Length: 65
Image (cartoon, rainbow, N blue to C red; front, side, top):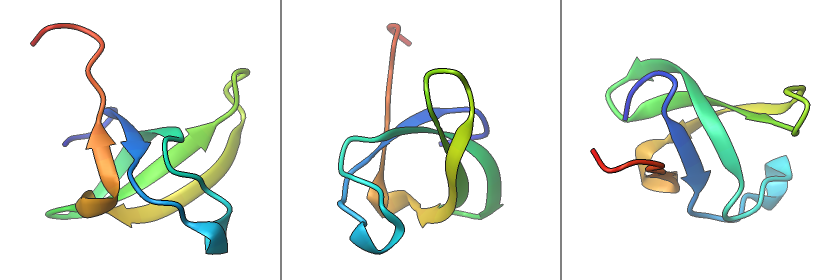
């Protein structure tokens, strides 16, 4: 995973109000496997920015790589 990759959450995180399957964008990598992820609404307004580990994220692919 790298900056600007689109991810989906693999786990329900009720303490921060995020659900399994929510889609976000990696906006920073702090160290190997630790990312700041921004979650935005359809208009682009961020509603959550969280630091998450790789084991809670799934990389999404929109095209064949």
